[in-house]
Image (cartoon, rainbow, N blue to C red; front, side, top):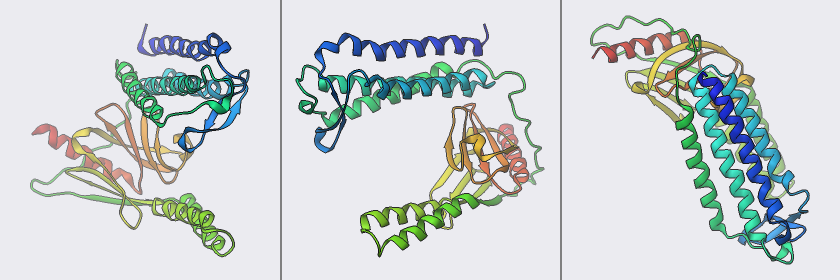
Length: 315
C-alpha cells in the first residue's frame, strides 16, 4: 500500500470516528440537557441564543463534514507529501475544534432546567484552541511521511552564472486590479457614509478599504539572504523566507481561483501571495511545501535563487 492509499484509509477511518464521537454525547446525554439548549453566548458568557436538541447536530456536523471531505480529497488526490501533511493537519485541528465546541456547549447546558441558566466561562475558549493547534501539529507530523510521487516535483528554472565576489539582487513588483478596486470601493463607501450614518458603521468600512488597498501590491526582492516580499507603498508587512529554507525555485502559471482567490492564501500543500493570475515565482521549501508569489517576469528571480542555492551548497 502506497502512502496515498494509506492516507485515504486512515483519513476515512478518522473522519468516521470523529463523526461518531460528535453524535454520541448528544444521544447519551439527551435526558440531562434542556430543550432547547443554549448555543450562542454574549459577553460575560450569558446565553443570547438557543437551538432545539433535535436540530443542534446541524450546528456542528455540517462544518466538520465539509472540512473532512475537503481534506480527504486534497490529501488523496495530491501527489505530494505536503498535500497529505496539510490535509492531516487540517483533519486533526478541525476534529479537536469541533469536538471542543460541542463538549463545551454540552458541559455548560448539562443538568439545567432551561437554556437561559447556562453560563460559558471565557476560559473554555483557550483549551479548545490550544488542543486544536496541538492536534494540527501532530497531524502534520504524521502526514508528512513518504516521498512525493514521480512527476510531482516542478521543473526547476535554470541558474545564473554568478561572478565571484559580486552580489546579485533581483527586484520585481506586482499589483492586483481586483484588490485595488475592492479597496478603493471600501474607501469611497466609507467616506460617503460618514455624514449619513454613525461613525461605528462608516469607520470600519473605511478601515477595511484602506487595509485592502495597502495589501493590493507587493514588491519581491531576491538576494543572498533569501526572498523578501513587502506589501504596498508602505512596504509593510514583510514576508521573509531565508535562503536555507528554499530547496529550488521555478516558474509556473497559476490562476487566482486555483489557490482560493486573491491575497495571502494558505493551502494544504502551498502558501500563496496571489495578486493576479499569470506566471508566478514558485519556491519549493525544504519542508516540502510550495510558496507561490505573484511577480512580473519571475524567470530571472528563479534563476538567481537557483544560483544562490547552488553556491550555498558548494560551500
